[in-house]
Length: 314
DNA sequence: GTTTGTTTAGGATCAG
DNA sequence: CTGATCCTAAACAAAC
Image 1 (tube, chains in turn blue, brown, cyan):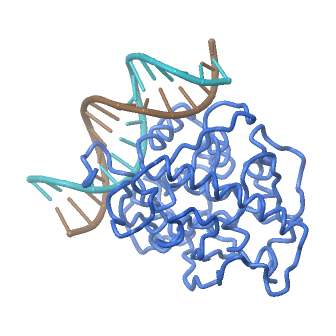
Image 2 (cartoon, rainbow, N blue to C red):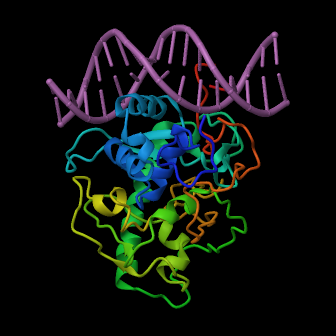
């Protein structure tokens, strides 16, 4: 089994599970939702290993998408023709990350289980979650536009009191993982809006990107390209060459109290958005988490909702 | 016909 | 050892 610790995964299987990879892809996208094909692209772009045997892993990945509750399907809008739906992470699966690390799953995610105390409705209803995400996406879009026009809000036009509180930036955290590849040459890709949602949680959540000042790797928003997919997303920037992606993954962790009524503006997001580009490939011989399991690397998303096992609750 | 999505099934590995 | 988690394969149905 491939273990982290090599220079790259060019020829080895990445230590991430499909769930992790999928989560990375989804979170790398500002809209926080991607169609299947984009998820494939993301993975193939980043991990050469997956440029082969596509039939095999893609089948597994699809299986994971539909089998795990942490992934929710968001229907395409009528005006957004295309195949398949968008896939997003369940709003409640965020806290299943272990410090945001994609190398290790903290706990499985099952709708309806855990977070019993979480008012978060979606947890009990996939539809709600999907709806919520759509709303969020829309808001993101709006926020993005606003940000685009208001490049630098002094104090931060933050809609939410988000602060880079994330003291801990796990090297395997999605932010890092993705950030590493997406060092935008010239800026944050902006994304259009062709219809689909954009930042909402993000904008406010990424003060360092949109206005708080610390955008080192990320530059000001700029319409990167004109390659928008049919979904209204900049394919190029998002899933290609990974050169123009803004991609700052944000653990979709709506905090237990932020969604009840689809407030649209999650209050805080564990902004452990690191800028440190580094870890797509775990370089240390040891799995960052100190884990040694040769093949247990990747799971960070706690999602894999249980397998066939009858998961508790439900 | 191809892609997407759902299900079922079996094997392997890891943690408790 | 057992249960949880992951991976892979495969059959099917539905949508494009």
